[in-house]
Image (cartoon, rainbow, N blue to C red; front, side, top):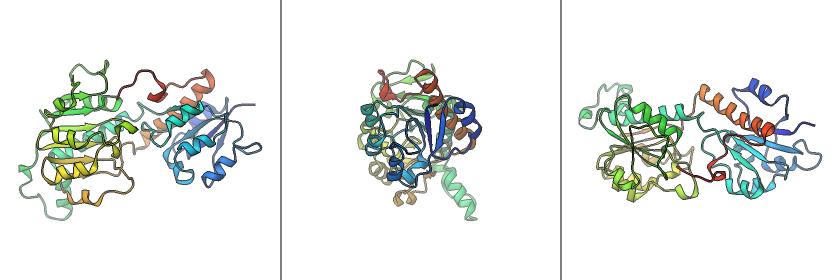
Length: 336
């Protein structure tokens, strides 16, 4: 009997790929449980999920069965050995609970790099040039906002600091190099694959003191909640800009708002928020802040790549015993 794999959400773009990648090596079952309790019940003997070895999941599935927290992970049978998460950020899955149960967890790095980096690039351009303010003025039939030129800057020649030079940060570095911008970065360790034009700073505050635009690209983990807090925000040059396409909780939102209120921050460009889909209404009071509703990977090309990459991790696990995209907690060497 072929090993059973659960598709714990809707495949939107990669229907044919499910058959091509898993059709000949797995019994593919699509989850249709209306809630968490019934989902876990189906893993029991005689249930339609009995004997499941691998699970594909993405964030949409949380609407019915919730996130993959410790309670859910602990409720899975011992047969489950791999969870393929569709997404670069995997904070909706309790990785420590997975490790305790001997369940591998993979994500989809690489597949999201272009889309998220171009979103960050848009936010950089929008905030430096204040295009969001200009568009709202035009839509209100007021034409060009008076005095906007005194608050705007060209992109060329500015210094971009990247916090976390992984795949997305590296892609952004290449994109902004075309202006050019000066690119500096900090990661937990110096990235040996960093482009030669990227300058590494071991000391974060020394980096921030030279920063015109800070772009955040670190994963959300317990130790990164509020990482960009009061101290780091105040270490930025007066008039700097913060861009966030990572996770909302990585930034201390209250500290950022205070810095916007007193002018230490000139602007911010945000694609992510601490309590999505809720947005702090105080952010709406700042015309200089560009806001997007988590659009980072919101396009069909990237989303198909993400689905295929998650499915490929399951295929590789079933055929070789290991997928290529284990999350960082399963690796010996760690870096942001």
